[in-house]
Length: 294
Image 1 (spheres, rainbow, N blue to C red):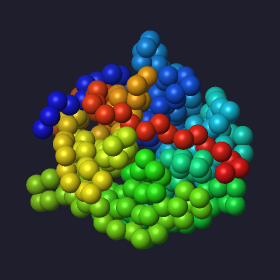
Image 2 (image 1 turned 45 degrees about the vertical axis):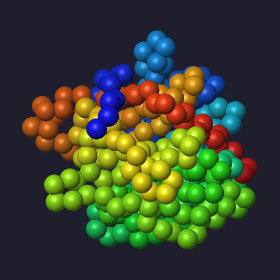
Image 3 (image 1 turned 30 degrees about the vertical axis):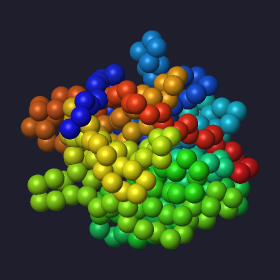
Image 4 (image 1 turned 120 degrees about the vertical axis):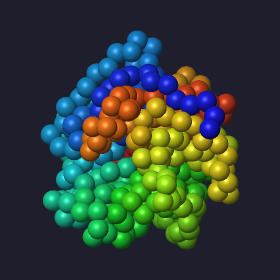
């Protein structure tokens, strides 16, 4: 283990997820899925602003011109800068009593790539989808928990995890068309003694993939060919997603969860639900802005 993450905000989220750095505002947005909130954190002042939503929000992207694209339980929505719904872009095509949108991000051409979670944890109804001006298209099916969406620096590799199956995949991705093909296993996780599994991820300028290991208490960095390069402790059991930010894009932020954890775990890890950060030697990729006409 190398030097790890430090607390930057005791956010007390139930299920913190999807940190997204705004280059224009120099602030970090992140969500609390179960509390139905989008948070705006200004690291220069430590100010936290909260936007309340009417339903669970699994993932967000920033929109060119302001506002958010968001994966909610009911579907993919366009929200204004205050989190108010502008219009629904696409329905969640699955059984919404046990399915909601979970992890996602904007692709290099401004589309939104987002997956769902099968809350039954057994039916395999979750999928990975792409939204663009032509509507919603499915990229993968038969998933339990879609997570870890990120793109290589050239946009031609898509990373994607099925968390409950302890597996991280790669796809060949065509930025021109948004078509994903040739799924391959990038890495498998978990053992009898280690339940850490891949949750949210991010890619740096060297093309290396960083993943938060839920129930693993750490973040790992992998080379593009799948070699484990380093791992960094997080002072919680359940980190959920990493994302680069800061003026030089060399601050790696990490959200975490407290929901569903035992009392003993919460006593052992009292910062569960907090927001953490670590300085890195290599900068991360800026996340593209969503374009409804992409």
